[in-house]
Image (cartoon, rainbow, N blue to C red; front, side, top):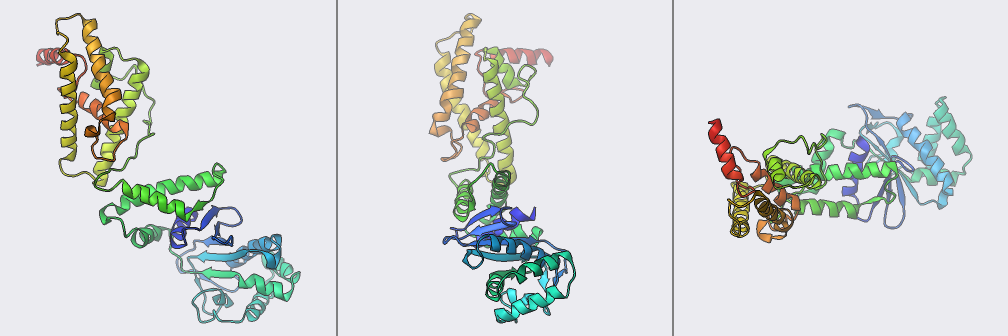
Length: 389
């Protein structure tokens, strides 16, 4: 869980041209514009943990780095090595030489190599013996070159601290009231991309450019002429039961002979529009009274088109003719209304389910719907309500 979180923070901190892989040569692989690859090992440790001369965290990473260094032709390789740890490097450890800034960061590399070898000689674990054996196969120049490529970044943010680091440090151009919502959207996208990367479904690396573009796209949805869209491809958790659905907007569609597949689409539009409105309410992105004014516009436009359709019909006509009128009215709402700029809740909100689902929500209102399709639906409903009363 720490890997994608920390990778997101780190990619914000690096140049936009940086590319990122996860779990390739190390926990994180960063590739800069010149093709230099930095292998990053991550260590999320207990509070108060310290990194010392023989810390397994350092030497396990060093062993991985050594194998990659040898694989890529030693001094000819384009590798750098990074250890990111929530621990603090002990002030008495030679590992201080790998941190920046530190009192010992200016230590000559030859002395660093000597200190590393002495530390390894003082231990008899299989890990340190294996690393010592690998170093013995290398020349002094190669050892110095290898250790000169290592950097330790200690006291890195813990997992619970990362969101605030990103929100407070890299989202300042975004309105404060929407930063958390935008970050949540960004993180959801990021987590999905890292899953695709880890599973092999995504072969291209993540990049700083892609991250910036995605953040910009999401933030754009929170501007005054737009609204965030969350449910374009959403489906209910439970299976859609077209035949068993007894909601009023579904009953209305059955009355005008709408077929099963179209009713299923209507149920999806209703679900997405209803869920979207709930999300807008949670994120507090709507103006006071904006939804009420939007629904009034939908009803007004619907009533105008209803009058045009129904003026050629008489309620005493055969039911087949009335059904025909209702189908024509619903066809307009289903296929034509989404093309009208006047029916957008805001200028840049073009997702069709917002309009289509809006009509179904109005058709579902009880006890009396504000939108209906069959010309005699309201009169028959009034009769039923009167009998019930």
